[in-house]
Structures are given as C-alpha cells and as structure tokens.
Amino acid sequence: MYSGMGQYLRLLRLTFFGSRRTFARPTLKRIRTMCVFIPWLLGLQMFHWLGFLADDVFFCGYRAIKVRSPMFILGIPRSGTTFLHRVLARDTGNFTTMQLWEMMLAPSITQRKLLMALGAVDRVLGGFGRRLVLALEARAFAQVRRIHRISLFEPEEDDLVLLPMAASIFLLFPFPFPEALWHLVRFDSTTPPPDRHRIMSFYRRCVQAHLYVHGPDKCFLSKNPAFTARIDSIYRYFPDARVVCSVREPFSAIPSLLSFLSYNWSRFDNDPRGCLFRDMVLEIADHWYRHPIDRLPHHPASQWAVVRYDSLTADPRAVARDLYARFDLPMSPAFAGCLDQEHEKSRRYKSEHEYSLEKYGLTREQIAQRFGDVVDYCNQCAQAV
Image (cartoon, rainbow, N blue to C red):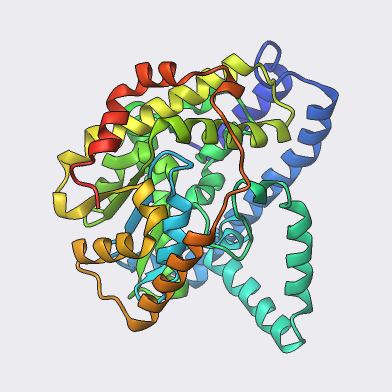
C-alpha cells in the first residue's frame, strides 16, 4: 500500500541507519543540513495534510470539477520546458498554472485562500511583505538563478505538489537512495498499479483544487519533466490531455542536466563520486528521452506534439502559434503581443550557465554511441512543430 508517511519513514530510516556506502554518506555537513531540512519538510507536509482535510470539510465541491483538456509540457530537463511553460503561462485567458508558492506553501484550497487573503491585506498596507519576500528569495536563490530562473511568484514544475505523497522526483536530492525512489524515474513501467493510482488520483485532486481557486473554465497548464516517464498515466487520468514534448539533442542537454543536478546534489553534501552520479543521471536521461518516443505514437496524434529546442529558442512566437493551430486554441490579441515581446527577449538572451561534456568525463563519441537513435530523432522529429 502506498503511503506518503510510510515512504518518508523509509527514507528517514535509510538516512540515519542505512546511508553508509551510499551517496548519502554521513558527513558532518550533511548531518547538520538534514537535521534542519527534515523537520521543516515533514512539518510542512503535516501542515498540508491538515489543509487537505479542511478542504474536504469546507470546499468539498472541488472534487466535482472536470479537468478539461489540460496541457502537459514535458521532456528531459534542460530542453526548454521552462521557457515554453512561461511563454504559454502568459496567456491567462486560456491557461492557469501553478506558481512555486502554491506548490510549496499552499497546495490545498484552504491554505491558498488564507495566503491570498494575507496578500490582499499586504497590498492594502503598501506591499511591504511581498517586497521582503522578494528580497529574501533573491538572496536564497542567487546561485541557482544562474542556471534556472526561480521565484515563489513564478510558474514552476508541479511535480513539487506530490511532496505530501512522498512521490516527487525532487526527493532524490535530499534522499539519494535509488532503491527507494527509482520507481518514480520509470513511473509507467515500474510503479505498481495501486501506487500509480494513488499518486495520479492525488495529483488530479490537486489540479481540481487549483481550478477551484483560479477558475474551472480555464485549461490547466503543467510543466513537469518527471511526467516524461508518465505518458500513459497522463492519458489514463486525463483522457483528453494535450501533451507537448520538448526535445533537445543530447550533446548539449546532457552536460547541462549534469551541471544543474550536481548543483542541487551538492546542496545536501551528497557523495560527489563523479562516475556513479554521472551514470545515474545518464540512466534517467536514457529513459526520459526514449519513453515519449516510444509511447506518444500510441495515443491520438491530435493530442500531442513535439517541439524542437532549437526552434523554440530561435522563434518562440512561431512555435507557440503552431501549437495553438494544432490544438485549435484561440489566440487573443493581448497574448499575440506577449509573443512578440518573448520573441525579442529570446533574441537578446544569453545564458550564464556554462557546462561541457568533458567536465563529467564524457565525449561526443560516447554520447553518439549511447544516444545515436535519440540524436536521429531530434534531427528528424517527423511530428515536430
């Protein structure tokens, strides 16, 4: 039986009693970090479950909301999913999406209404509270923002909403125990059906709760690289879902992914043994590249599309327009203007994130040998937008 608390107890047992000769070697820095992080994490999840219980008492109507034609943006991390997500999220006439504060602090309706009320009071008083939060997050996120733009008030990948179920792939950072969490990497293939049902049903309720707050008439927009392993699960629990898979050739995507994950890995002082960490990331990339290539063609062609990273970064305006035409979405003049702005910004953008294959002991020949079929697919993309 899948239980969020049961999974957290297992992760705690591995952290304190089973971490020797693992990635989570018990260094003094890691012990200090986990002694602060674990109470915060578990306390927050208990607070969330109280919010979910309150929802069933005060806002039980949310369970009747129909999730109509949600759109899921997925693909291996560092393939442009964040960029595409934030471009489409500007179309507030069609879409609603989760911001980071909602996932981390207020996944329940009760919590959101409380925090939104506090926000309204803060605005009346001059917005001091919001400015303070922005100043604090600027310091807290200073380093990671060189790699990934992040803010509590920005759209973010909603795998974080699964933390109360201990089913978020992000748990691999503080709890680097593949034996406990690897089923999330190969979700459709290896997660037992009863567990898949509990996790995906919980996720669907979170989407219903979001629509209850932001408007049941809106199309829910999700960006979630971890859902690249959940193609079949998405269509089972959201039969009319539209899936957009972003693809980027492995020669650039994999070193960028290794750089980004190693930064988060180091935050918890996990074992930096390069080849073991590198091979784990390559295995994730292996499945997340190939699973959508294999599974998307088994679903109606009108409900999915592939976007090439190069096309997206070169001309986001054209990519968005093609997606809207493919999925028969209306485009307002206001959003068309936003696309013009995004197009100009993308022409001027230069990333500060530096990475290379050589840093991780890899060569182009090794990548070509392991991911040759993926490279061919990225170059061809017969269904690409």
